[in-house]
Length: 350
Figure (cartoon, rainbow, N blue to C red):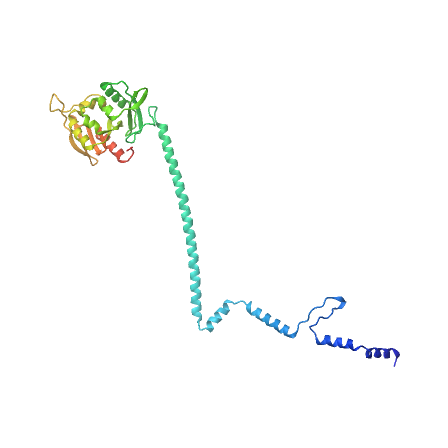
């Protein structure tokens, strides 16, 4: 035997029991930390029990994350005894319900869009209407003549205003002045001008009141009649078959005013004709000493009126209480009707 082989065998035999015991323990305990080569960090080795637990966890995870398909649902329903026709009907019903929901949502969207369109359209119409009204007012102001004033008030709507200074005028001069202003007013057909009577008091011009006006005219209607009227009144000219004059009073006491008007009828034409006519109308009289006109009842636009006709069956004077708050005296039935309509239209101040 060579000498080298002999030395190797002796070294194997002389290995210490401690080293042999350490090697055996490492083989028996595989979960212990084994050193890696080249000085790497040791890693733990899993036992068989730990491996079985890991496999169970992985299987459970696979079952939990499995995807349920429509085919699985159908198969489950068939196993439970549901027929294919029932499944098809149920599916069709679900689709129909989804379709109805879509239609409802679409109809709601359509309604909301139509509502928005209606609101926008209404706003546009309102704006156009306001522009038309403002334009009309501006156009009317631009058309007014130099004799018109916008600051005057009127019982009914007047197309124009005409200021008349009557300071220091007596009865005859006042009647002639009114007749002159009435005739000279240039008005379109159907228009009404408010003839504002003013006189100066202590350096200030003031509108004439109803009682002041009637007292200046020295009418024979009586104090009871004058006190039955409000302070404000309107003297106007209506363009129809010439310029027809009219008087419009507000009434405080209808019973007193109506009773005194009947008593005033026999003097009314004599008291008023100079401001309504260039010459006195010819009317048949019952007495040569005192004029007693024959007023009679008529109905105009469902309103009672009293008329005095001239010899040619034309209108000399006509008056009416269109309501218990107003009294109109004029020379033409068409003018009386026009005043009725403007009162009814509400284009006056109460």
